[in-house]
Length: 567
Image (cartoon, rainbow, N blue to C red; front, side, top):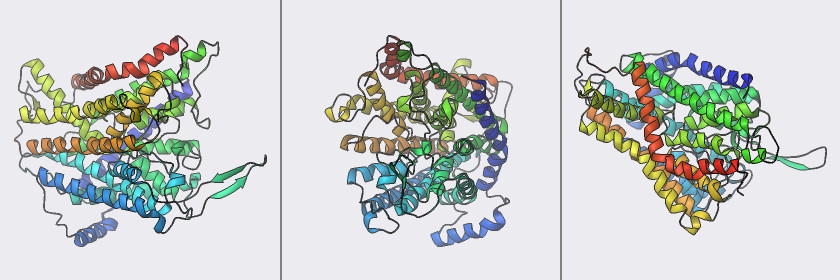
């Protein structure tokens, strides 16, 4: 580890912190329907969208109506993308004349992008046409991110409201998230990436010859416009197979830094949005501090592990850091910072191959996702997942002091606790069960890139990543019919099985009367509460996933110490 490496991490954190309040406050005004600096330009466009869609922006929805709207919109989008991928050979903007995707791969890809996961069992530069990239994948990058933000806002309204039992209007929230937040930042960000050298064209691929006489194919296409929303919306799907390790997607150290900032910006700022909308910004800052502590804790371990290198290599008398799978343009520090960032959110973009990390270095990205997408997390999804842990922590605190649990003055009763626990249990259920099935059947073992504990880690990572709607991978695991179908189902349930209890909790809290704070109230913004919240998250994650992690990365590390490796 180096001082320069830590300075990079601190500068990134400060760049994110600077925008938490202005961006978070702006989002609060947008979703409260207040006038903002973009209103003169975008308010007429917003009204036109409502007229075309037959939407009454003043009509609000109960939680179950909001849920139905989310599901209906998502599954229509799923059908659209599946159809697009199955017919792309007949559609325009396909200069490479790519064929249609197979039915199982098209299903997996459509579910992946609809759920904001962007898990990719294909190479984009050799599989997907420009039209499919823009009208299918990039479109889902916007709307799946906007849907996540809308769900977080609905939960915040349920927590904040004491007289209304409705949660807002999904169509209005979706429109405002795209129009006022995602599109403006993406337009500016796209221009920045183009200036850094990211392609934005419709050219066919170019073939170049090196001075040694070797031929190389140079990819092009509308890359910058997809790159910016893939990071900003914490989607993560790469235009090309190498993702953000590719010089086309990520050409310079500044583009690397800027893309990292995009990944964290909205997830971090939504904590302040939450504080503004519940009329107590201390609540939002408490969540931001808890997220930041977990973020730097993970970074410390993964950076140390990769800087220390592989113990099995050391047994051969070769010292040094682990540079295997790293992009040498950015170095060890930037690669570990990216790995921690992309899994502390639900982005999944990579600038290094996680499969090549040391055992303990690979463990941290795995644990980041196993904790439930709560270390900043995806846009919107990170906040609502974190708030479910807040409810559970409030319940535990109430048991400890012998008082009825209260959250912002509202009584937390059996129904609310049940919804929170159901939401938290979904992750281990959808990760551990399919992992156990995969290691017991031939098709689950057929496409492993490695044997032993590292091979087990590849399977565990795949189901963890797809369930967390992250999309990064231990890239040694190859696709087949079994994994196309099971990871697709895992992504689907990983997104929507959690959404149901989240909105049900919002509906249960909406309209509940709030009692004023008293001397006996357990505050949910104090350092004690932040510590208790972090402890609850770590204990739940450790108790649930430690046995599985012990069979994979931990055993691999212990065997590496003895000089054993796995191929």
